[in-house]
Amino acid sequence: MASTWARTRARERIAALGAAALGDRDLRRQVLAVLREVIDFGPYVWLLTDPVTTVGTAPLAEVPCITELPALIKAKYATTVNRWTALRRQACPAGLLSDAADGDLTRSRVWREVMSRHGIGDVASAVFADQYGCWGFLDLWRQDAIERFTAADAEFIASIAAPLTSALRECQARTFVEPAALHRHDAGPVVLTLDEDLQITSRTAASQAWLNVLLPPEPDERAVPASVYNVAAQLLAGEEGIDDHPAWARTHLTGGFWLTLRAARLSPDGKPAVAGGRGSTLAVTIEEASAAERLDLFSLLATGGDTRAMARQMSVSQHTIQDHLKSIFTKTGAHDRVTVLSRALGTRGKPDGYA
Image 1 (cartoon, rainbow, N blue to C red):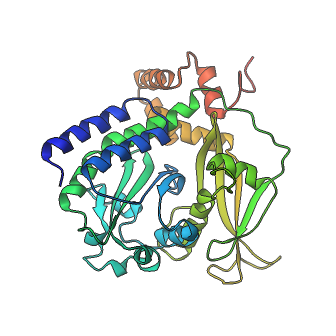
Image 2: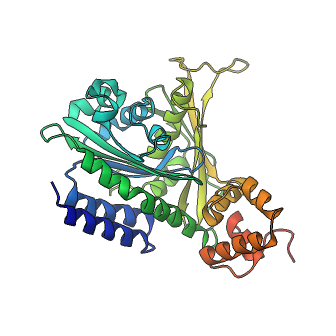
């Protein structure tokens, strides 16, 4: 077990990383390296999330069951035990699977169906959320040959959740600093269909190019469509009454360009979709985030409040408005309101309607 001094030092280093303006992947990699020095863990999964829907995107993971990824993600979403949305409702943002399951890991569907076959004996989890939204969640796995995580491990992880939440939100905010990169629109729609086990059954030709950017594969390998599995798994979780968040998520692609992924059921013409039907097909679409979706996300990132809260504040005080504008200008590097709006909409130059 790491000493108190070692954990204090690790906490300081993680706080410094959070303030270093790193990209989200570099931030997560370097934080994990520091965590390894004070907490013994093996595989891990760290996802960003859409702040409104809490659906996972942009995974950084090292797991022994990559070929079972669809089953792993489906089971992760289909259990309430130590789920990140459950942690968000608790006073502490970190939790241990062994504690949440009262020592009986079989209560966890993801452990029962996948992790148990790979010798996993416990999972330490954290959710990175604040009053503005949910920005990510982390799972650290420990092999069953080692003792389970301790209360001190959970306490340490909880102690770094707040600064990492702010850092992850800042990472996303910086994607709005530059105008959105232009992407080709002549490749056709991006649609994938999946079965109930989240196995991809068909896809449009344009899908592979987009997936390669979402999660770049190793040479000579195909991209793993983890974000696709996540929105589809959330659809199933909603149908099973596990979680009522909608099955869509926004994720940053590259160069200020944001995508929206959505999952829905297909049904025969004229017939309603049947939730949970074994013959029913799931469809996931990937498209450029709309102006409204970008504006909603931008308001959460740049001001730390939703549009309704901003409207209420605008009716209270002109000073409040100026404070918000100063915050937005600082975070986006903009110098006027027109530039801020163009960044929010993802346009180059001035938005339509401005001379």
